Length: 360
Image (cartoon, rainbow, N blue to C red; front, top):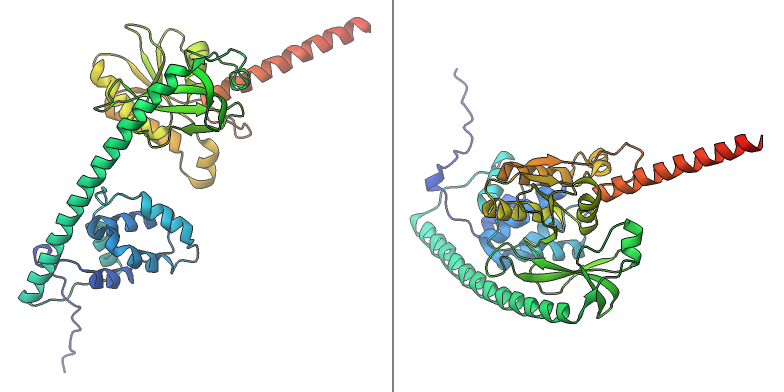
C-alpha cells in the first residue's frame, strides 16, 4: 500500500501574490518574533510604515508589545522618527515572515482587484502626505537658516579662555560666542549645507556650552552639515566628526591640511561626497572616531563603520586613533589629551627624581 504524501501549502509566484492589507499584515507579524535586536525591530517598523503609513500604527504597536523589552515611549519615538517613504519596503517583512513559515493563500479575482485598488489608494495618499511634509520641512529649514544668520550677526568671536576650549586644549578656529536662549556663554558654530538650497550656505548652528553640552538650532536642517576649521589650498582634505576633534587635527596632527568638521558620523558620507565633487583630484582622509569600547561590548564600532563607508564611497583614505583597552577615549582629541597627560606625568616624575637625587 502506497503512503500518501503530505503536500505543503504551495507558495504563490511573486507576480501572483495578492496585495497586502492590514489583515494579512497581522497574520504575517505572528510569524515574526518581536523579541529581537533593535535593528531588526526597527526594520520591521520601517517596512510596515513604508506600506501603510500611520494607518498601521496600532498594528505595529500591538506586535511590538509582545516583546518583553517593549516600552511605549520608545515605540512612539521610533515610529514618529520613521519616514513613510523610507528605504525598507514591505518586501523585507514578507521575506522575514516567509522564512518563518508564512504562506500566502490563493484569493479570488474580485478580492485581488479590491486589494489592488486599496493599495493604489494608500500609495496616492502617502505620496500626497509626503509632498506636504516636504514643503513643511523646506519652509521650516528656510526660517531656521534665516534665524541662524541673525544669531551669527549678533555673536562675538569666541574667547580663547572659554572653558570648553581650555579643557579640550584647542583654539577657537573662527567660531563665535554668546548667550542664546538657555545656552549661556556658548560657542556658536555655523553649519554649512551640502545640498541645495543650502549648499555652501549656513543651514543651522551648533551650540557648545561651557560644560560641553551640545545642542543644535531647533527646526534647522542638520543632515549634511559641515564647518571648515581650516582651509589650505591644494592640500589634502581631512574630514572628521566633532569640532574639538577637527581643531586637534588642525593644530597637532594635520596642520598642513584642510580640516572639515562634519559634526557626527552620520554626516561623514554626505560631506565626503560634497568635497569629492568640488575637488575630484584631492586627497581626502576620513579621520573617524574609534568606538572601541562599544565594539568590545556589542561587536559594532559605529565611528569606524561610518568612516569606512564614507571613505569607500569617495575613494578616500581612513585614519582612526588607537586606544589601549584600558584607555577611555574615542576621537583624536581624546588621544591627544591622553598623550599630553602621559608627557606631563613623565616630566613631573623626572623632576621629582632629579630633586630627590639632589637632596640625597
